[in-house]
Each structure stands twice: as structure tokens, then as C-alpha cells.
Image (cartoon, rainbow, N blue to C red):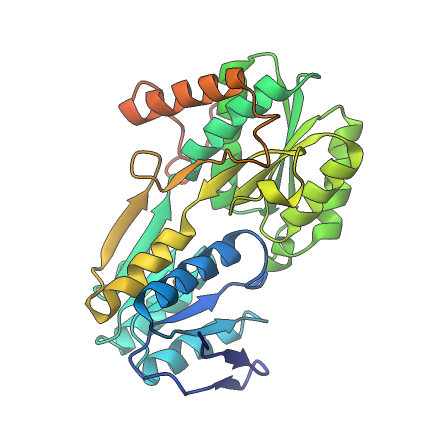
Length: 329
């Protein structure tokens, strides 16, 4: 399959090849890159799956600066791409401005809500999946201290952290959770060196399991954890394979499903608010041949019990996006 490649030039010039049909779907990857082994890469897999199963082609862009968000959206819309999918909350304000100018184009934004009639807003219950890996972390820890490393310090990442802490504390009320954010700008998503440094600092404070919700920065977290002989927890994509026997599990966020569904519906994309959580398979934990030996039967039983209780409503996981006060820190 040969895919149309969309290539960004400078902040003032946007070049997209036009060999695909004008009505083909398009995807815009957020800063951090298509091959971040996490969020953007999960989105890419959904697009690739659609192309393979449908025989169709899609168009894509990897951003290299904030200034290119609006350029990319307008160029795709003007060229007739439909729908146009974008990965990440940072597109929200731009999409809010652009969408009304192209009423016949359907847009889908992942990880944020934009209330426009031609926009599908897809959000995930990351707090639920993070609770599950928090249970696993608490059970796997021998020191009683675990860590969390986020990417950009925004409410969405605090949502991951809060659910994780709640899962840890529900399993071991005496556990200590060390939390660090990588930064306050988009560069925080693609700084594996800083991720490794933060991991080593947490290890110095006796953390022996570290959960990374940091995009490409998380690659550095997982590498440092493997080098130092502790467990890590991956995010978004299943990252167990990166360091077999070191990655305890991954909090899988089915961004691929969100993209696949949007591409599959095409110009008939249903708009509005869509939530993907534990109950409908939108988030989960990962168990495969790469972590089967370390994700013990006891851990699995505890995580599965928590999963069932969250789905049934017996366990209520705090949603930081609805209430920015995490009750358990």
C-alpha cells in the first residue's frame, strides 16, 4: 500500500502532496511525532488498519511547530479531505475557529471537546485505566514507593496521575507515590533524556515501579527503568515489547480505534461527544508474552477485580477533568 505523505514546510508554508482522491480522510499528528511509540503511533496504527482493510488511502501530516496547526487544518479542508482527524487536546482552540468555516467537512478531535455541529469529540476514561495499573504497581512494589512521570503539565495528564494514585492507595494505603511532570510546554512530550533523569531521581527516592504518561518522553522513562532494574508501566500503545520483563504492563488507550472508526465512517461521520472507557474497551491494561512472567496471577486477579468493580460502578474513580481536586495524593 502506498500512502499519500503530507509534509510540513516552514511555519508559513504548508506542502501536502495531492495524489490521493480529494475526499480521502486525513490525520494530523501532534507534536512528538508519528513514531513516538505511544499516543501518535497508536493513532497511526488505526489509520493503517483502515487502509489495509478498506483498500483506501489517507493523507497525513506531522507537525513541527504550533503555528502549523491552523495551516494544516485549513489546507486539508480546502482540499476536500473528509473527515480530518487530529490527535491531541492542543488542537481544540484552532479547531473551534476553523470548523465553522468548513461546514461540509467533518472533523474529529481526540482528547478534547469542541462543541461544533461538524465535529466529533473523542475522549477517554484514562483515569479508569490508570487506576488499574496503579493496583498493579502497588502489588509489584517491594519498597512501597512508586512513581508517576507525566509529560506536559495539563489537566489531562493530571487525570492519569490521579487515577493512578487512587489505584495505588486502594491497594496499599501506606504506599508513597512520587509525581513529576516533564514540563509546561509541548516539548515535554518529546524529551526522553529528561524522562530518564526524572526516573533516576525517583529511583533515588526508592521508587521501584514508575508509570509514564508522557508521549515520546516516556521512552526514556522505560529505558532508564530497564537499565536500573526496576519496573515501568507504559501508556497509550502497548509498550510491553520495548523492554520485555521490565515493563510491568501498559495502560492501553485505544486511540487506534478512535481513528479507525472515524476513517470508516468517512464523510458520514457522526458528530458529537464520544467517551471510550473500560466498559466499551476504550482503555485497559496489557497482558502478553512480554510481561506474562512478571504480571503474576495475584496481580491479574486484583486488577481484574478492580476492573469489574469500576465497570459495575462499585468503584468510583475520580475524574480530574471534571473536578481539578484529586481527593487522594
